[in-house]
Amino acid sequence: MSFNLNSGDSIPLIGFGTWQLQGTELIRNTLDFALAAGYRLIDTAAIYRNEEDIGKALKELLPKYNLTRKDIFITTKLSPLEDNADNAYSALEQSLKRLDCEYVDLYLIHHPGVLGKKNTVEFNSKLRDGKWQQLVKAKKNGLTKNIGVSNYNVRHLEELLKNDHGVKPSVNQVQWHPKSHPDELLNLCKQSGVLLQAWGSLGGTGHGDLLLDDPEVKKISEKLGKTPAQVLLKWALQQNLGIIPKASSKNHIEDNMNLDFSIPEEDMNTLNNMKQTSDIWERLSVI
Image (cartoon, rainbow, N blue to C red):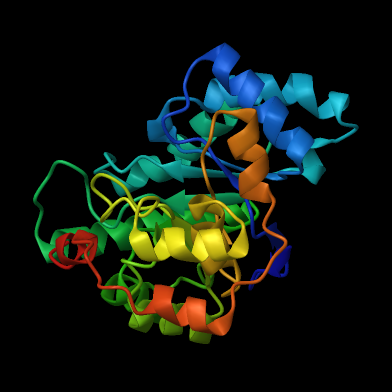
């Protein structure tokens, strides 16, 4: 399954997330499992500190599966610790060196503010604009085919859309699961032609309640003969949203790709109407 971005490029709706995956051998083995299972989107970030190992693994593994660089969609992100907009362009250049690529398919501003710093709303707004200008320059110079954002709420995204310096964001990657899904943001993304790509699809510490053990989710999974993780991932995919599940075991990697089923409307409604528990949107509102 794929989605046509506003740039005209196609992006797989199911990607392979690599947050917290570190170590040359672990990265190599998990990417081997992922490519064998059919994943063609690899999602990483500068702050994950695994770009170099991903680059090495892909150089080895792509020929094994008769694939070339153009067959793989690579996403990476500007560090959320970056507090100088002028560094955004060179940061992408450094990511490309670590990944051993001439370009990435998607480069994201990882956070609308600066992690660990309580700057003013005005400062963050100016910083976001400066970073976006650098990303526009990087796209025009061929360092990335698409640019986008991550963890942007409605206010952040509206601000960008009003002053996008000639290039609309292709993607907004945000926490998204049945207990964290503001409809206003989804509607804005759809109206603006921006793909909403979900991270944290299973919930968990810091991202709302862990949903794998939720009684309603388990009831639906038992009814459909699927795992709770598959139900949660399919919930987003069935709404034509992107997902980037992370796993390290071969079985989980394969299960997360095996989503060729449908969730009945009544069960979708149950998931859609779960009580919202995540506080990430409140935290983002002051940035």
